[in-house]
Image (cartoon, rainbow, N blue to C red; front, top):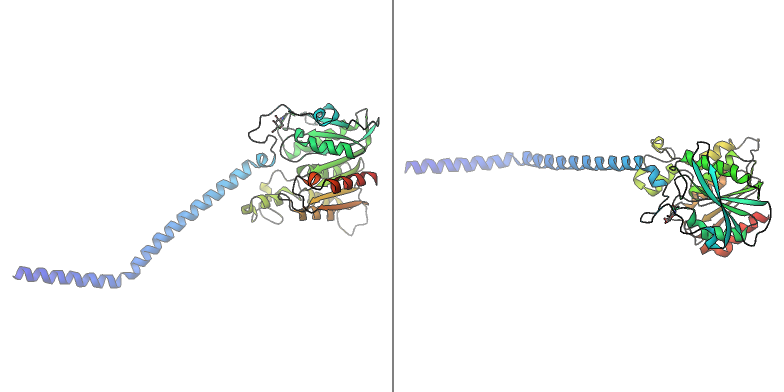
Length: 339
Ligand SMILES: *[C@@H]1O[C@H](CO)[C@@H](O)[C@H](O)[C@H]1NC(C)=O
């Protein structure tokens, strides 16, 4: 009996101590729970930070491959399936050697109706993706519209050109292209128009600033202010670190800072010293899904030229103004040449 009573008393004691334990232990358990949650959150935060760092590292390491896309994935490379002949143009392949020895080339295209002996020339600088054969439908319309021959430059690493693309290299290619094309016997080297779309617009700006008195006119279409500003548009998570006034712009190696270059060239607004800049036509696709149209407007505003025009195509997207607004687009371009 007494054993039983002792056991009962012990059980009661244990129960009461258990009860008192649970009264005084609500806080520790909560803390323990919180600790566990905090631990998980910390781990999660750490994992996210690692992932973000990894993505940043990848974007940093592969920035050239993200920017320059000579071969559209899944398509075979290194032969052209189409040449200007397939688009009703005469053409000649022109080899070009850049100052650093890299060999590129381009196509000097002539409309079959155009028979001027020493022709003005329009040098076309293409966008970042694909090769010059993709620009033939556009080149055909350009050739048919403007009083000039058209030269399509294949940047280094693109199409049948040697080398790998980079800003420094492409600028060397573009300069060598201007020099080589001016020397062609059937081309009037004093009458060069530069036409650049998107990335090619940044090439055209760089060349116009380098050769302001040699270039007769410049046409820019849907080009960006700088790659660091574009980076934040394409990858919103980069916005806090790269772009105007952000801390990590030095990580952007391929800068193409057209706006900063123009501003630097023209200098302080109040200076009277007129800097030479060719007449300039800016073509803007209002529905551009890649380059925000306001970037074109800021570029346009920064240019000081005796003659500049900006024309907006209301329904056009990044690549299609010349077909979607066919009449308006080509009459705008033609007027610019004839004025
Ligand atoms: C040009 O691009 C097309 C399509 O991506 C590809 O099939 C062709 O081989 C390329 N040409 C060259 C010379 O790289």
